Length: 180
Image (cartoon, rainbow, N blue to C red; front, side, top):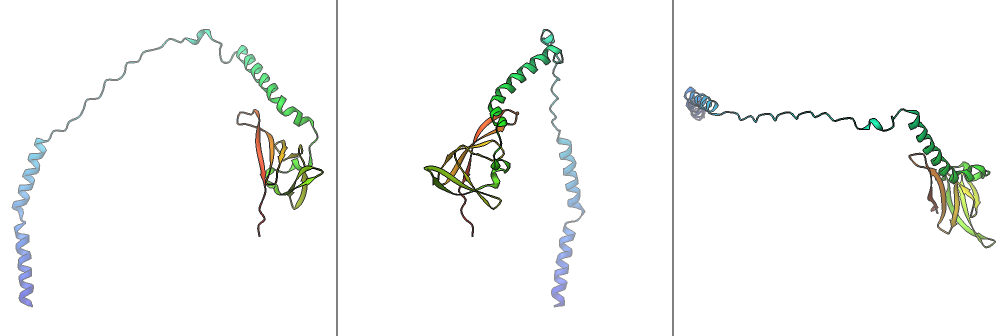
């Protein structure tokens, strides 16, 4: 066993001795030669673009802060408000119905019936049941009932878009399945 350890130690010593300073000198010499032969290639920078001044051509147009420009903008806005106001004005002039004080998403359609030959939707809000007919209003966006069938109530709402203009959109209140 001692002989075995001695032979292993001897072989390790021989291996380390073989990797002595002579090979290190060869590597250093090779690195110096490679460094001297290698020349980095740097592309030259492109020439800067020449600045060409442009003449100001809007000198004859209306100054953006003048009274004339403000007058034009106010006329355009008042014409737009008048056009949009025609859509919402009748809604603002009428008396509000009780179902308009609740948001549409707090309502649930729980059924529909036929009463006197006309469809009537049964809408539940805050654990109270309401009968809704064609022409009634629901929700806080001037939602007028346009159609009632067994599965849904279709409304025409008047809302403001991102620019502040009044537009019409269609909304529905769908039959809610009963949860157990």
